[in-house]
Length: 94
Image 1 (cartoon, helix red, strand yellow):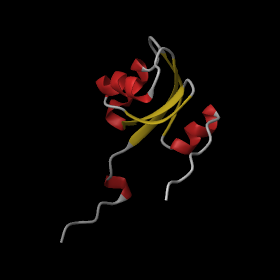
Image 2 (cartoon, helix red, strand yellow):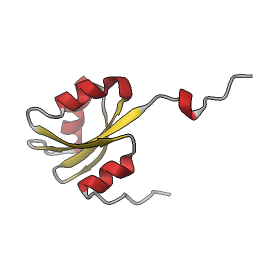
Image 3 (cartoon, helix red, strand yellow):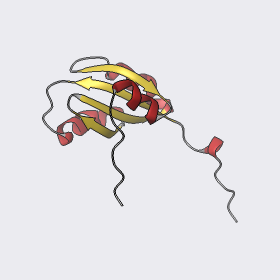
Image 4 (spheres, rainbow, N blue to C red):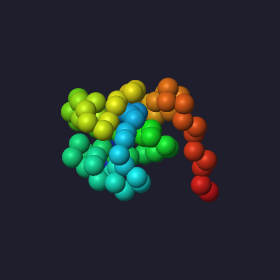
């Protein structure tokens, strides 16, 4: 039987909240983020939240601080980033 994957052994991630300009929809923004291996989680107006693996965090943070992006907040918890950006928690789909 395989050993249970505990919380300490799971991959660590960071959530980064940022402001962007020049993107019309979610697909355009997601396409721009493929270079840093980030997954777009939330997008509202000109604010967005992405999830990156801990080992990719420094490069992602630098990338999201240049050009059409402005990095505003980051944390290990998405709820903290949402609170700092003033984004509401989305409704659960059941």
